[in-house]
Image (spheres, rainbow, N blue to C red):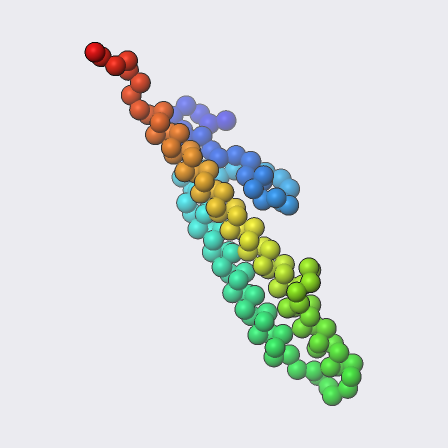
Length: 128
């Protein structure tokens, strides 16, 4: 509960993070920073996706035997394969969820501010 004079907090954003259990709160004054942090984390995951591509392309087998070559090929598939569960897929999904969270928080903040502005309008009866 917020005490008198304090702005209420946005609550229960877990609904926007579809597969994330639990709840969290963000102070409205901190919301712009949280949005920036979500976007920064999403970009960091996209940067790591580029690193995973480079890593998979530059893996060298430790030996010339078939087992070494197969291990490198398999690690490359785990890192950058198109199938669900690959490192690349997980980072892509994580980045998308972080962007969705930032978008939802922006929408919530915008709606809150619009509601706040509407409630601040003078509601005196019109004088004729």
